[in-house]
Amino acid sequence: MSRIPVRTRALVGAAVAAGMLAPLAACSPGGSADGPKTSARPGAADRPVTVTVTPRGERAPAGRPVRVEAAGGRLTSVTVTDTDGGRLAGRVAADGRSWVSHRKAVPGTSYAVTATTRTEGGTEGRSRARFTTAPADKVNKVDWRPGAHTTVGVAQPVSLVFDNPVEDKAGVERQLRITTSNGTKGSWGWIRDWSGRDRVDWRPATYWKPGTRVTLNAGLSGTDSGADGGWFVRDYTTTFTIGARQIVEVDLDTHRLTLVRDGETVRRIPVSGGTPGGDKRSWRGTAVLMAKEGTINMNSETVGLGDAYDKMVDHSMRLTWSGMYAHAAPWNARHFGRANRSSGCIGMSDADAAWFYRQVRPGDPFEITGEDTKGVVAPGNGFGAWNLSWAEWQRRSALR
Image (tube, rainbow, N blue to C red; front, side):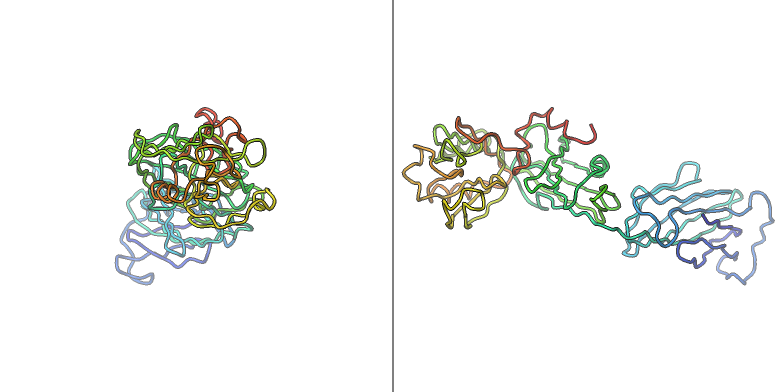
């Protein structure tokens, strides 16, 4: 590490080669290196302050905090900025001998460091340095839900799916912060997404309170996700609001769907669920409305059911990644309220589906019961975390 002598009573500056700290010239206030010198008498109190900065060099290792240290004096302030103007915040220690950034240095980034110092005798000085971190061999990216500035239902989790494997789950989870307008407590839980990728969701112990404002700050930039995962080179944030308490109760045995809002029944709708006795059965448990997809093509071959159907379907509301929807199914009208004869989805009339589609929003829970089903919706098959008890969910955190 390089050392910097500081010998002047005034603020001084010097151009510094990348990754190195050079001696600073002495000057009087407003003067130059060749101008008149200060009148301070040499003494122990005015011996040079030496400043060291790590990392240093042209290909410094990333993923570490920036550290600035002073010997023979004190640091009064430190500024670390990248080439885009971003700033690494930090704090000078109480004894003034060191400064450490709160965040880590990001791969493939150049940083400029400016440190202001004061000798024991009160002489002030300023030193500058630059260093560049080595580029990342692989970058990990994140797909997150819900989107910013949305209003969602009371069962909506915060969900992050990673492009590459996350080996250091604890290290990644430490960088994730959830803040709420009313102090709602919850927990992160690691699961395998339906796509096969690593995923971490945050949910409260029970459904959200309506009106809660939620903010995710994923300060991942500069974090190494581990072997085969690569580095994160950006942060992620989203803010959303919880809407009305709407719960959709689906009883497959009585073939009825009931929309309950704020504890009051709004409407009951006759439906037909998945055909009993085979792969066309519906899932049970809590499935969360993932998206309102409108009119879409549904092809049975995409969900492993051969050539059973291939048609355009109106008012489609996705409930799982595996292909269970609530939607209009006029071709099945004779079974609504009487029997389960669909290929796994919850079908209803055009009129009922159009009305229901307007009422619900992503994040609304569908609480599905029925004797003959494929089983409970898995945590990674859509937003199935609510099918685990609170204790089970907490155990999925990497920090417990």
